[in-house]
Length: 118
Image (cartoon, rainbow, N blue to C red; front, side, top):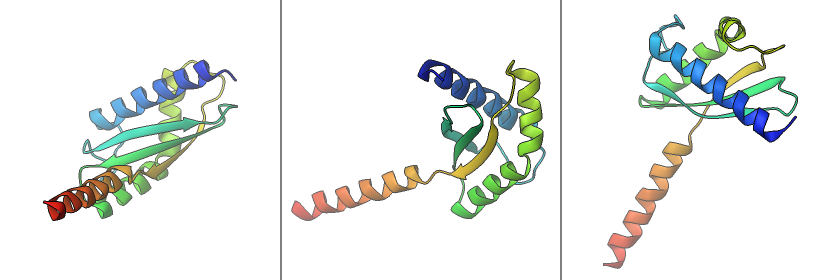
């Protein structure tokens, strides 16, 4: 499958799932609009999509949101099937993306080193 098609599918999935989260379509108590999609990786054959989620809340609440999204994958895939005109919808897997937390930790280390040098 061409990279352009994969990127387009990733973009469409991101857009539709983001809309579902923001509009409250996914009725799970831990899924709220304080979570965001940071990245999506769709396999070359379009059969699987790994969706990376970050949250503005605590790590524990973010993990509950990811678990809630994983429990709702069938519902989400059904909604995607109605919106996206594809033969098959990729199997969805939601995972927590801790890259933002890692970035803050690295920045904190850099700040501490620069303050120590002064």
